[in-house]
Image (cartoon, rainbow, N blue to C red; front, top):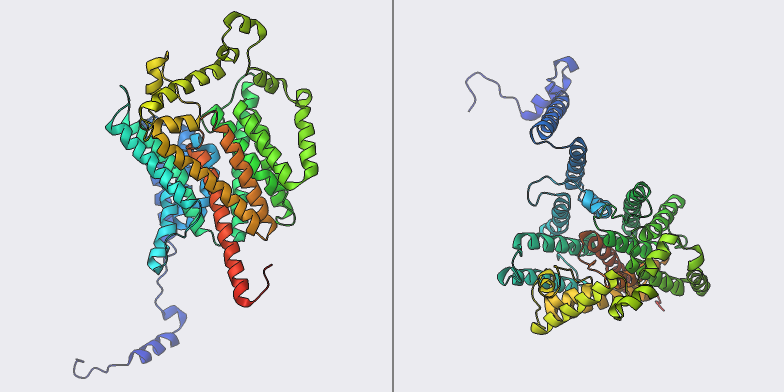
Length: 496
């Protein structure tokens, strides 16, 4: 209630009088000073953090710089969730070089995964939409991931031997599941073909980054040393780039899709990936890439197939001596054969040991053929019959020994589903990009199938995270093609 004698002006009249005042009399509320102050405080906080990390905790400067870059990327990804997928693609080729905080669970891949998961789930929950669409690869991949986790639980409950470390095993399984998870996020968040193009360019840039690191190592160490690049393992590096080369070669040559500069990036990435696949001197990668290129040539052009066959036939002439020596190591020379006499020992030591390992694992497999002996049990199983613990040196033998027939059947189902998705996209795609993506994905599947015959490559986070990213693009492209077909049918446009 107004006081006696006081005139109450309406709100509109008071606002009008305020607007009529001279600018000097209008109250000013400027907060421009706040940003420099906040920036200064953040700079001081960062300087104090660097001081503490370096002088108190003994962190090297280069490690601090990598941590700072990782923090910036993660913060940017939180505010721009779509950027997280691109950050993931750039992180995969340099997996071992990613900064780690030292805090359990707080690392680059985990943080990127959290951002990606939130950007996928939260908007759909808020809008009341379906979280996931049904795809061909989704179910077998999810089942295989669950079986992998159950196999780790099996190993924890029934340790296969002394020294089995459950915590370390669960960390390894989590890294594998993390690589698989990118499929579900990308398959449900990519909007259109334009976004697919942008992601493929980022994939190529990541391959160039990883390839340059490998080339630098190769030049610094010399031809006599087998390099591991930024993936931390010689054979994983070779398998990664064999798979990447098979995927990028058809994309780099797709007609009328990418601009000149983007095509240069794709061609550079494809060429560098092909070259890098030979540097670690992995015979499995040689074979995988060779068969993948044969498949590509057969699908793209019969003339290209003839050229590839001629190039392979002339490989003893043009191939570097290190490659030829590595291939010839598969079999021992006549003098060694005369000394040992055993057919198994006619192979070089690494090949002979593989055969012996596979024989031991198959004997153990008979004891538990349905569910196997649990995750990471092969080293403990082989140490009983051999001089020391050995890995299986084959994804298929390892899966049979650790996950039994159930796991092996799930793995076969997964690879068959991937092959069927590639073939379906090749059939339904109308754009040149869709068809070349299908061909490249099938070729990378060939490379991955072959390289996993001689080692366990599938569950490496960089390989799984890249391969199933491509698988997600394939399944997403199939959904786009189906939607376009349904739209044309609805409008009455002939589709044949």
